[in-house]
Image (tube, rainbow over all chains, first blue to last red; front, side, top):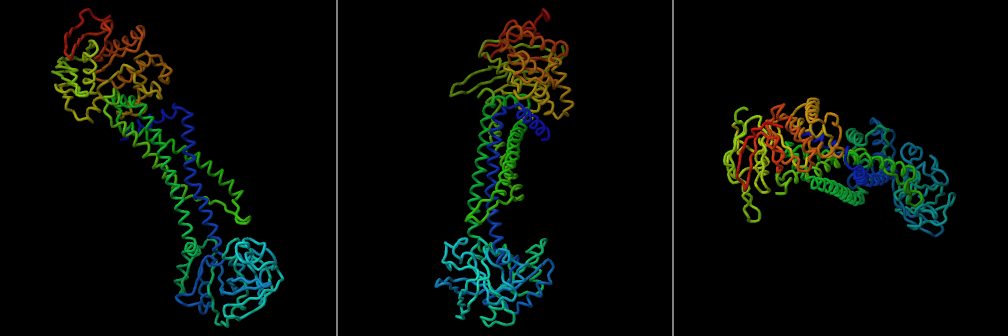
Length: 401
Length: 234
């Protein structure tokens, strides 16, 4: 077998060294495009997935604890917070109260979720304080102020898609009717824009105000949101949180985004799988045809090689080496093209609504997987046609009988 | 001359093509001694190429016995036939049959590699063989850079590099002009005279026989004459 490999290698090397260079360049170019297709589209899909996962961190942080069973609230959220804050790799944690309400301004009314939060704690938890496009974020003492999501305000991101409050601006007074029919008036302190519906259709108010409106006590919360240290692994920390005695359901933001985006991502993934499959089939067919035509043209030569004592296996191995060489060169060229395109799209992201920036994500795991797929494809596509031709007897191969 | 090396006994080869039976060999028997230079002659369709293919283990007889040094080669399993052909026999084809992408030395040394020799050893053998056929200065030339005669000499070098027991040559001068043919035949003659190489060659040119020690003539698949040359080599 070792002799077969040695002879196969020498034969393949001389074939590549002295073969037609223009054909070689063409084959490598096509294989480079095929390889790039295997990794380029998934990189964009990865970018979409990453973008959505980041969006999910507004409401859910890195980890979120929610009420269990039929409970509306987490009872004694401060106790839960105390346990969580003692867990290693937890950077910060806070409680929130989400309630339903309608907001009215100038006879325009929209339904919205209002999140009651503790403003000073949010600086370490979420991006809310950093996405204020107009005005300011809530202060710790501000009980009569509200932050409106951009989609509720005319002229802002996505406001044309849903009903909005018209020309409401920072400083305007809005009336809020809560789901328990309590009515309050608030001054708009700021407008936030997260370019994501879960954020931009919401409004923010001080936690204490919601407690007051709903008559809640003993630190109730609809969610406890956790931010991890940079090196923290959300799955590991989730397990630790459970182990310190938190009884309520604990979710990582990936799990939350998975649940919400699963269907959409499954559809996109299906497109990706089909696209990958087609690419691999096209690549395999290309190599198969090239090697098959090559072996047919050299049928007589192959017969002679067998006649002088070269084993069929070494001839097959030689074609596998040639095929692998094409593919390896195609992978190299494809990687160069890929990184050029990635560099371009990272500098010039794809824009939606002039605010959503979609940048592709370089996934090393995917690249390695695609390289393996291409190499396996090259072995199969190189071996099969060579096997067909080398099966023929010497007489048939050389003299056609 | 030594004892008999090849023993061919009543070889028969029939081909069946589209229901028509072609009787290529009808019972050929002869023996070959070590160091002989045999030329097989005959008109087209006489069976000379079929006989050489059977002797070179490229084809199998329908009937008959064929031994080299008492080893029965007819019933040898395919894999062992391949190995025997690789290590013990040399075969020169009419149209050189070189690999165009390989240099002269690569064309020759690839067979030594196949035998399991090291690259260094294989290169040495290839160089030695190419020097024997007068191409020691053209080791790195690819077939396209060689003349017809040179290509055939590379093919001979490839066949002799492994120091085969017997060298078979199927009309090695068919595509060459007279002068180049003479050069190739001189190479074969030298191999035979100087190195004692046993050679069995098929030809249809009468003038080639001046190099032969024995001439076997075939017609319709039968030996019609088997004569030794008495007047020595030219």
